[in-house]
Image (cartoon, rainbow, N blue to C red; front, side, top):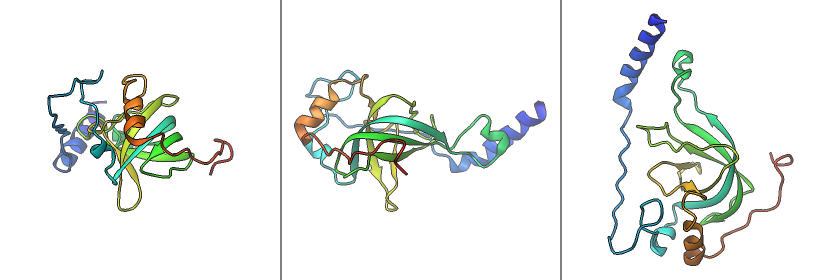
Length: 171
């Protein structure tokens, strides 16, 4: 046990230089009352950012990304890939099933998704087309900030409804 713990400590120490601490900065005007999560409501300009993909979706599976070290994988992950069943999307014609990657929780700013929960996901589309999100985005459970969806619909319209496919027939 002590030997394994020592190996894990060494692995963390070796990886530490490549890890960056999570630091989110949100500039607010201070003129708008905060939403229930403490953030100001988003502006139409913020929601119109072409690099931003917004999803109203249910998480149906969450798969951890391994670190590459079997011993460390028992305690740490490099993040997760979450598959969502998309109800609506903004700034993107999303398919019914879509994967979003998030970094490692804590210092990696990774958002921790739970299967069978409904989210508003605010993701960035990378050059490779991969969608990523973090705790620095507005991503949230819909039940935690119930006023956010009506604000989004008011500012950006009802969004796009993906084509109808079921979990069983989707690739």
